[in-house]
Length: 325
Image 1 (cartoon, rainbow, N blue to C red):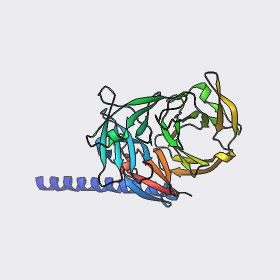
Image 2 (image 1 turned 90 degrees about the horizontal axis):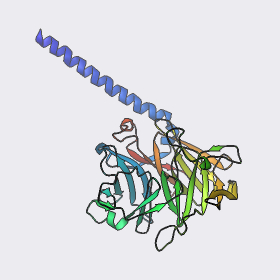
Image 3 (image 1 turned 90 degrees about the vertical axis):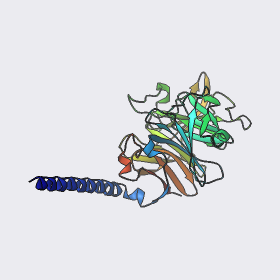
Image 4 (image 1 turned 30 degrees about the horizontal axis):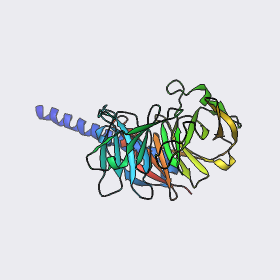
């Protein structure tokens, strides 16, 4: 009798395992079907490191003129946020520290590099780290400076000597100031901005505390990149909803020379809205920062981290390169 009971238990356990495996396979297959147009045009570029250790990937950038990538993200277990460098013989993991040596636990939504200066988005601007410090082999990097911006940035990029820092908006959860929310000439309801600062090539700090340009954007933006100069791509996502990569042709964008007031100074304003939207790429959930390089949009994703997990059942553990000319 005892042996029969054990056999039944064994059979039930095996059946449950098979059902779980079947469910996982069905989930992964279903995700591939839902996003077939994305995966059919994209290749796996690299694995995202640290996903089993509590790392939540956020920022992503190439180091100029190389295939080396720099990533950043926070830790779901409350430990020090991390910077990773990938693309060489080894993946380098670096813990971030505040100037006083304590653990830096910021959200690190975006990362950008100019010379030896590494910019990481913070609550009131960007915190600055040294690339040499990040790469010196001691696995620790300490904040050396900061840059204040007029908006609370969730992502950043440096292009042609200008620092672009953009905000994330979601009603009730992530609000933006009333002045950052506007109805565009095309009638769209834009709810966030990107502030743009010319950087001093010697100090890599903004030449002026007032932005040189304001870009008006939609909400839920997680990252941006430039495509061959005149086009801007914005990645948007929240939760398990589909991500979107919106591509805008800036030559078609409406603008106002005195469209935005910053403490009494009028700053040129450019609207990224339906009037200049030229493409909408639907992508899997939780797309974060993006990079464009040599005909591909590279997309960082956070769905496979231990905080969310579901990306481990699909393809969220990878950076994908989406072909786009």
